Length: 81
View 1 (cartoon, rainbow, N blue to C red):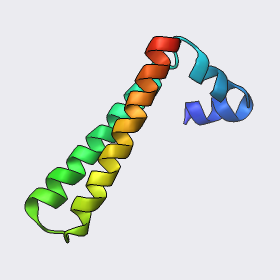
View 2: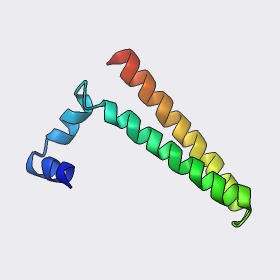
View 3: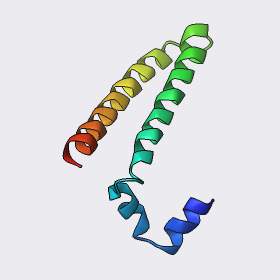
View 4: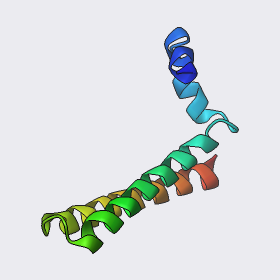
């Protein structure tokens, strides 16, 4: 809640937090959160077989999107920042 108030009271603070050396570390943590969500979906839906075959294809697509986003962020942040 506090972070929403911060970004609403100071409109430019969101972009400045992405380019700040210390605050931009939280973007990597958000990517790890997305990976954990994808892992949990895979463990529940794919391994138990409670959902149709479409979930396997969806998880494959989401995995490659996640991988591309994580690599792009790592290359941009760690090499150029």
